[in-house]
Length: 165
Image (tube, rainbow, N blue to C red):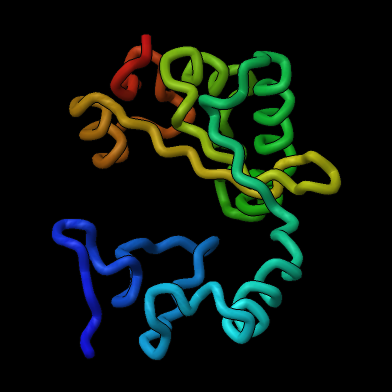
């Protein structure tokens, strides 16, 4: 007997899910029927090991979720003085392109979502970050051509994501 699928409800995961994330493990279980995932062998083999797995020592923190300006400033100070210097400090001319303190604060006033941080759960300090700024076309052209450096980007050239400003 084949699988029964209710019209327009999908396959209930019997063919996997269209989802990709490092936090989700898409384990295919073709040998199980729809309700078999609730049976003891499946729970012992799949659920229990997953539930006892230690969480990542890192947590994501999106810029939009930081409501305290002082906290945002402390995080940016750490990324600029610790992370950036560790990652880029030995590159020639790094001091020429280093982001001046306070510039990134003007950027987040336009668009706090440009930053996403990895926060060490134990220390509460940033362990890494990404800055993805949507910018105006002319600013992009200047950056691409080398006529302008990252440390010269002003808030006026940043485009807010929908729903901001």
